[in-house]
Amino acid sequence: MYAGRVERVLEPEVMDTVEEAECYDAMDHSVPNEAFVSRLIELGAHGRVLDVGCGPGHVALMLVTMLPEVEVVGVDLSVQMLRIAEEHRAICAHAERVRFETADAKRLPYADGAFDTVCSNTILHHIPDPVPFLRECGRVLAPGGALLVRDLFRPDSAAAALALVAQHCGGEDARAQELFRASLHAALTPAELREAAARAGLESVEIVTDSDRHMSLQRKLSRRSR
Image (cartoon, rainbow, N blue to C red):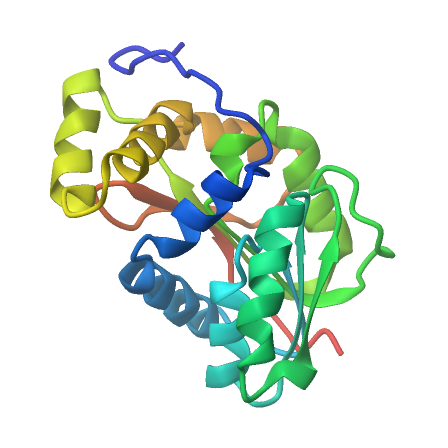
């Protein structure tokens, strides 16, 4: 455990009950999702995009709406999350450029360098050991491709976590607030993420603090990978 931080308390790796999936989908993620997609565009997202841990599909569908040239594959282990993602896809005007598949983020069923862009939004805190997940993200990314892995970071104290819940989730119901609080306690610190990235062999990446609760591991497009 890093000095000055509360101990990491793991969450279940897969949110696969109907209640969990529907609760997560009902929460208002619009502001952080828009910020995530904007950053991805700044980093040079293009071509074939893999969204790892796509959940109910919000980011994937936002991407194909904002970037007319991309095709997105969204993967998740949760059957219930993918069920909701397909419901959202069915009413999306750009549904033909998105598909959702069941896959384990730690063992992705794709060839090396299969994607021009790889992204993942807030699943890192669900994974006990982040190294296999980060290694897979790097493996399936084409040389020079854009990479963005964003997640919560663990607050300094339980009191700080509760303050973040009140500030950002105070209007949600008690179940949603508890999900957010648990996620904060399950998150890594920036130092832990930096160490995991090094162990995963990811090169030329930077760790940035995006907000009072989010951090990103990112790499800008260095050249058109296709």
